[in-house]
Image 1 (cartoon, rainbow, N blue to C red):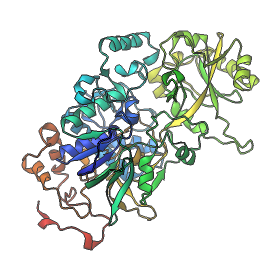
Image 2 (cartoon, one colour):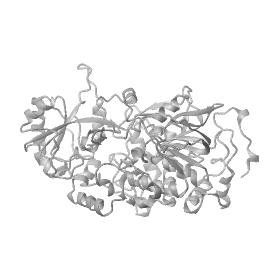
Image 3 (cartoon, rainbow, N blue to C red):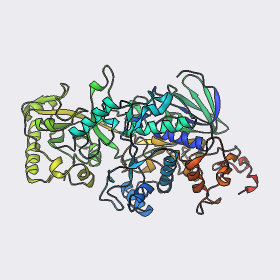
Image 4 (cartoon, one colour):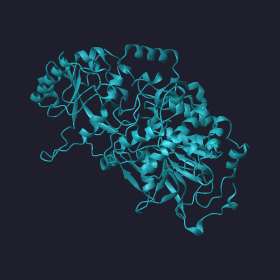
Length: 604
């Protein structure tokens, strides 16, 4: 869209993925005038091409289904995942507020449901075999009105059903048939990440949120040390009376930022080219601090299917949830050696960063997926249904030695690895790496299903490339306020918050939760955490937004009503969250005493 946008609003949201759209809905519920600016031509960003899952511990849907969970168990699980590297304050914010965020968006109109998926680290204290991972049901595009054709959609038909990463998933002929039926009979049906984005767009549109595509934001405007608005690539200046929320994703499609932060040679982005770190760049220009997760386990292996982007650059397809856990496959390095349990991609991630100090190389990059004809006959490859012919851009050979020569792999090493692997398959146990024995792997395939010999010619091989969720992001406090660089005790950069990929994932080094490009992070735009964790902050020097009093009196405001409003009211004024903890005065931390606004008599 190219119309002029010179105007002022309460909140400017940069990015229209899950984080940005959720923030906009929250702002509208609070009676705020919100403007969403999306750089790409379609809405959804990385969320739209994801699986669309959310992870919420101790949630009410699990309890209603008879499940048992607790905040203590959730805390124990996340501490295990964090392995000593998490930010305790941000973790506490996430644990406390995510269940209320879920209730709010459910009350607003999204019919969330439990997914059968389990916690990834089943060996962890507090882990559960289900109940914390949520998804949305399919939604028809006809419900989106003017945004009917305005959502980014992934390649292939499977997104119309969701659940492609569940048991059987893309390897199930019945699942593919159901997807084809939906494509024929219900072409507007969306599920998975595209479905989640569609639900959010529906809610935002119903609340009058103004959403613009094709509007890249180039820089933030500042006045007297606080962010006051944005300037778009078209030269439009937009003033933000209450603040700017950066929710524009990571930098996965920015080769220079990937080179600086990731140390993964051969990187291919799994996200659209619009995910290029714009928010990170514009915030650091004004002194915002950057935090890097040192041992990021949100690292995957995959490859591009050129048929998905004729004449362009296809997105990297993740193999860790499709080809790698399937039988009759292994992953080897240039020496022909396996280096991890292929069925548990979190175990693969750290091995990719190993460094050989003598050879001066990362021995496991590049690496290759090796499979045989039996795999082809029974399983899906590269977004094709089971049994489909392997495309010509995949190398093949009648023998393993010939395949090794084509790929540049040590033939002797590959032959020895396959012999050893096939022997273990015959015994039903992977003695080298325990493939199929992790709880996450068992949830998808039994050991007998993920272990299959590689012995039927022809043999196939394709180079796998690393891809990941960005390891670096803006350092934010538990209230989602971006911190300033340089202070030993980082102070907030007034007038700006960060959501989604820019919230830096609680500081968890060993973190991976089922991904929607939003991983619910502390205060990702949820009214439930509005004051306690800064979802919608009132900037320094601005008088309190008195319409918030309506939540206590039961009065009305332009966009705040119904069940969603009651969730906010109940949370804000519960016995455990009185004025002493949930002050709705302007946010003034980090400001000089003389700059603090009047307290209006500290009215209740």
